[in-house]
Length: 383
Image (cartoon, rainbow, N blue to C red; front, side):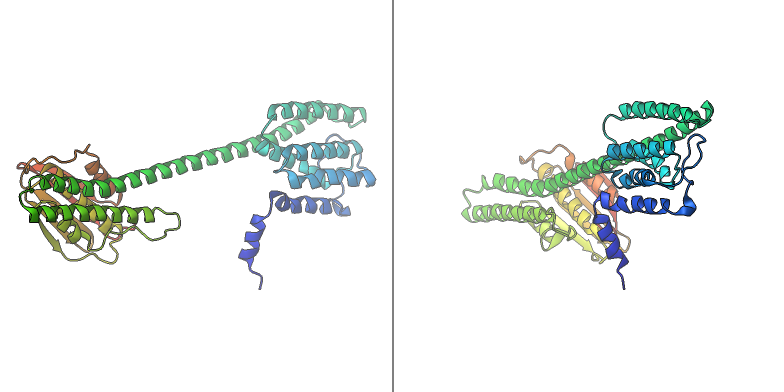
């Protein structure tokens, strides 16, 4: 059995000249059939001449150059034009003379330079052809020559239209590629923000607290150990994310680090933030990117709690439903005011974009001296 798909794939990998050659060969062979003698394009009214050696030359010039009509459109157009002129002056009117409009369309669609000069030269050549036919007694009226010229101009216009459509498609693809790259840069920047900001904030808060524990060596050692562990976790998470950005990495992005939310909450507690964690249900197998988005919402909310409400009681509630994951993070007050890295509000804006991108709802409000972050994320979305 012939594998049609494999044959088609190999044919598409062939050069454009090889793919265009069969049409020219077929046109040449068909033009040699006696039944089709005189069935080609006819300008003027000269009597049809029988085949001779020059007829074979005309057929070859009109049909075979079609193989290079996309690779070298100017060469194709010149050769086909010479063959067409020979065919009309000798009055063979072979079927291959119908290649003239094809050559014009190809030239208009693929010719890169000297397009206006080409049009002027072709027009001048057509006028000379019309004068020569008239001297040979073609008996064609001026209106007939004009109509045929307009038909040739229409063929050129079709090629121009094809060229414009191809250019518009290339521009559209370029814009799509640029938009895709921009979206990917935004995604990478958002991931870096989420990972780096959370870990660095925790490390800075722990380091600030360590300054006041010099009189308590045991607590100081525990705090410095927590800073070290947080730094190592940051490096691990960054390596995980960079691995996901490799071109040969096919796995979907998942919740970084084993333990998920509980590990994240425990790390925040070690940074000195009292966190009450409530988790209802468990993530479904079809949660897809919803679980990852929920993780990022909790991470960013806890980062803001460390920044702006350090020491304030914080509550994290996550409920896994059949259709959505609900996340709620709240603080009871402004906290101790311990210095922490500042932020430009990009985290919450990024969270809103991330949640809305999967069809969810996101809200962040102040309440009684603290803040409340809510998110509802539809389950079943693939990252």
